Every structure is written in structure tokens, then in C-alpha cells.
Length: 158
Image (tube, helix red, strand yellow):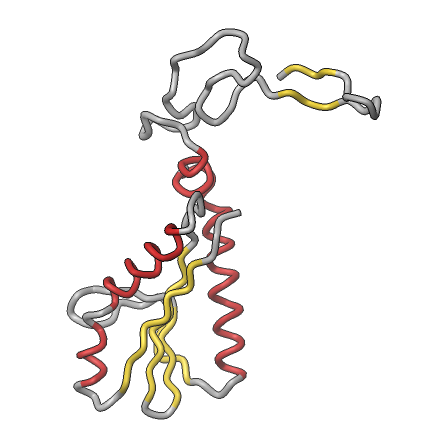
């Protein structure tokens, strides 16, 4: 890292010599090393890898996920919903949604996901993956005379 004087304000600013992919941004030289500096599992260190997949950082994104799930749980309990399961395996397929609530004959299958939002489609893809993943639970609840709705909640990493 190189410290250089600020532009017109006189305040120092930091110019990073390395980005997430190890390439210099100052234009002075190039580096070809692209493997993750923190783990042995990734050949290409990207911002998405560091924020969402790096095992050393998992505590942060798990805390974010669990905080959102806990807030939803409190709000739905306050609204008169009954908690059927929280982070438990349901059905023969082994699906494990974050929350399953019931209100009357309605069942809400809720799963929070924190995709890396590098493009608009990231949220749509995350939502569709959750809908596909929990679709086998709808017939299970229908056989009990309940109307099931899958509610995926994608929340960005940043």
C-alpha cells in the first residue's frame, strides 16, 4: 500500500497497489498471481469469493443471514403466525428452510439468502434457486390440506 498526498484538499489518501485479483491499479507493472491469498480452495480471488465464500469470513455472512432470519421470526410471531420449524429438515427430500410458519390453513416456507449482487440478475437467480429447491415441499403440505407458499428473501451482501 502506498500513501500519497490528497488532491486539492491536502488530506492524505490511500492508493491501493493490489485489487482483489492481485493486479496493480496504478499501471506500473503487472502480476499474474490470481489464487486466493487466504485459502487453498480457490484459483481466482474475486470480490464475490472474499465476501461470500471465504471460510475465514463465514462468521460475518452467517451473522447477517441469521440476523435477518431472527427479525422475520419476531415480526411473524407478533403478527399471530405459528412457528412450525426453524432451520429443521422437512420432508423426505431433506430440505431445510430457515423458517416455516403457519397462519390458518396457510404455510409460509421462508428462506433467506445473501447473494453477491454483482448484477441485477443475481437476485432473480437466487430467488429462482430457492423456489426450485423448496418446490417439493408444496405437495407435502397440500396432502395435509394446507396451502404452502415459498418465500425466498434475497438480501445483498453489500
